[in-house]
Length: 210
Image (cartoon, rainbow, N blue to C red; front, side):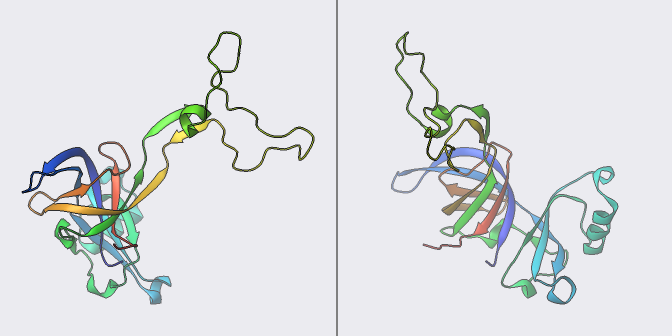
């Protein structure tokens, strides 16, 4: 991986190409990000680039982080992430990383926290079948048998149960960039990206390139 950005999910829309083909896209407000720290093998035992995204009020930033930002010569940042780039030497402290590091046609991996749906039953959460809806069945939306009786007398790991639905870290791979608006720091990505509107999205160069 040689390039990555932090972005905000703006929402979804659709665009048309010259042939009139409709393409659903997700709009991402990507960057600008700033290099806040460069990890080296000598000092840290590994190589990585730490970047910051979005400004944060001074009274909400811890003193150690204020020192990191001051050393880099950038304003206080709300989100800080590390990326293990293969070309760490190409980055410098305080460098601005804009959306134009990506180009139309590139493939990316998008990571975000998915929408939370609270505590849900097995029918909605896992798509299990419901029981008969007749008045006498008394078995409508229960998940069914949890396990056998005498042998092995336990519930197997991984059994589908009711529980928290969504609100998990999700990565969608190989999303194609349809358009790059460098002036407004916008990325238009084909298809859906995890998370609600305004969600923080990590955009990385695709691991499994098409």
